Length: 179
Image 1 (cartoon, rainbow, N blue to C red):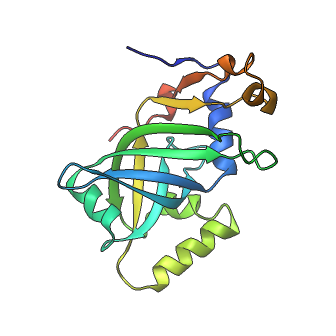
Image 2 (cartoon, helix red, strand yellow):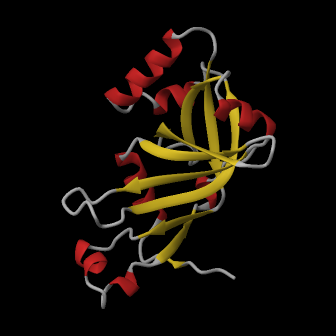
């Protein structure tokens, strides 16, 4: 049973929010079928490309090994409330398929050029030797959110927090990745 509702905002709005951040939590599946979650720096594909998320890692790390064995992943980007630290963060989350791609992939490299934090992360990873690789995540068509678009009072006032919403947006067909 679907518990999320169509969002009162668009995919473009969600993509814009994701571009403003660069930290998320990636969950992969171990060979034993257990979830393995790790905080990661991420980049969003350029706007003229299919909507993808890119990470950089080393082949020897557990997340890369897990993806090599099982491409199913989930990804969560938290949006903390910095003034009211006790209020749970809003978040955007989705499931998808991940794959390991060349460190020389032009689109992933371009995505990592959008901020100094991402560029430094990529340079640092590459400087560690020939073990670096990009992870490309192809999100499922629905992207889910909690608390996105809500103001802080909706979190704090009991009468208003029913409207925080478990929403979803759909990735437009022209932005979907097709092998």
